[in-house]
Image 1 (cartoon, rainbow, N blue to C red):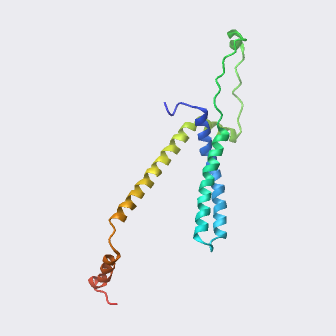
Image 2: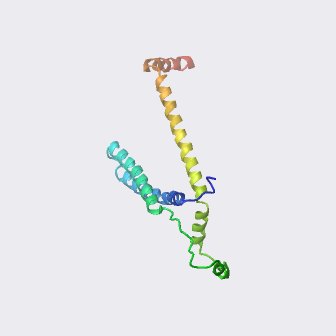
Image 3: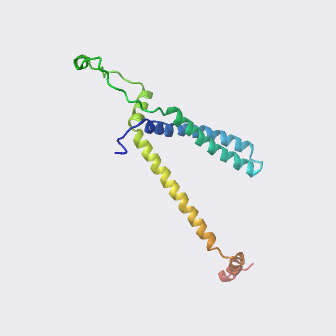
Length: 165
């Protein structure tokens, strides 16, 4: 049911994902240019700039969603026209050839739920990957041995390998 239901929120989320690709590309190119100009400056400044770019992408995506989201309004059918009038209306012509960009927009509109589902699956996968990596680092830091132990092993290594200084 998830992939067949369609709402204005799903529509806005799908188009937000599509728009975030080009928005992130522009923000990334601007960040790259700024970091290139600041390559000799303090690392904290560059880190702060990269962090600001990530926050800007989040804000831009949220603003895009808010711009595209329009709550559905339930329209009541008009009772002014009798049902026979609807039956007498001619069918719309379907022989019109759409331009390439309209075909792309139509395809995206038809597959919005799948785009959102794949985006959510990817986001979930990488969030779990991040959490597992953090848990692994925490476990490594808890099991760490003092530096002196590692230094002794490194000093004994050339001797065990039969190497002369």
